[in-house]
Image (tube, rainbow, N blue to C red; front, side, top):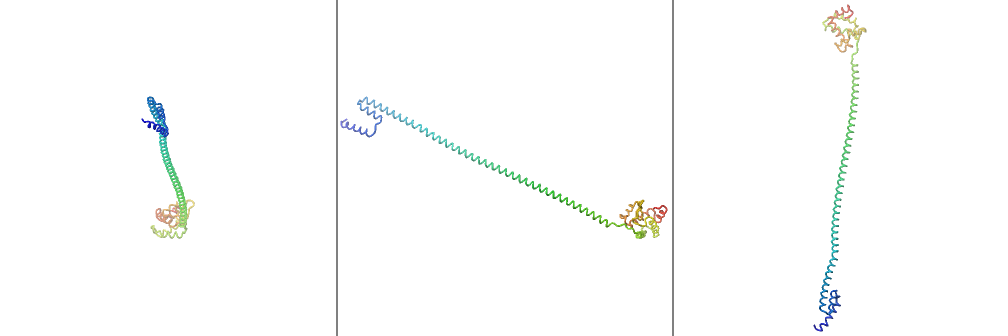
Amino acid sequence: MSEFNDQTRPSARHRDEHDAPLTKSQAVLKNAARQGKSGHRMSVVAGVVAAALGVASLGTAANAALTLPEASRVAETQANARISTNKSAEISASMNAAAEKGAADRAAADKVAAEKAAAEKAAADQAAAEKAAAEKAAADQAAAEKAAADAAAKQAADAAAAAAAAEAAAAAAAPKAVDDPAAAKAYAASILGNYGWGPGEMTALNTLWEKESNWRTTATNASSGAYGIVQSLPASKMATAGADWQTNYQTQIKWGLNYIKERYGSPSAALGFHLANNWY
């Protein structure tokens, strides 16, 4: 190596020293070079290299040691974030489910309340209808009973009025008892031929009934109860000749002539029995 070169090398090294700071390994190499012994220099170089490698390993380990907690923190943060996200999703899903359940419960409660209200309204309407029907039935029954009572009262009043009218009419229409001896004698004489007798029988008949009743329609025997022109005993026997036997001399005369014909055959024979017995 030339002297020029030797002279320029320190200058170059000097510039390098000023250009950048030496590392720990460079400083060791520099010190070894300064000692001038090649053997020792090589061992120093080997130590420096080893030291450099050790430092590099330590740096890597340190970097790894520094990076691992950070990675753990990042992973933990990410895991926490995922957990938080999952929890948020779970909470959101739970809240949604709770909201849906609450809405369903409210809808069910509203439905139950509506059905209850409808049932209560239907029951109230039915009760009102039944009450109205019962009141109407009671009113109808009362009206029917009143109408029946009024009809019965009217019927009774009409019946009483009709009975009174009938009684009055019967009283007005009833023949009055007529004591008319001349008319009675004339009627008897007019019908003697109906029994097969001649006018001569009228004299015997006149004498007979003069003795009995004086030809009076209402003649009554106070002791025996014999009644009428012919003095029938009992008096009701003359009803066979007519219902008006008490007041109609014609009915009495018809019955008397039939009695004489059947019992004696003629007025003359009846008079003869009467004169002998004082009755006929």
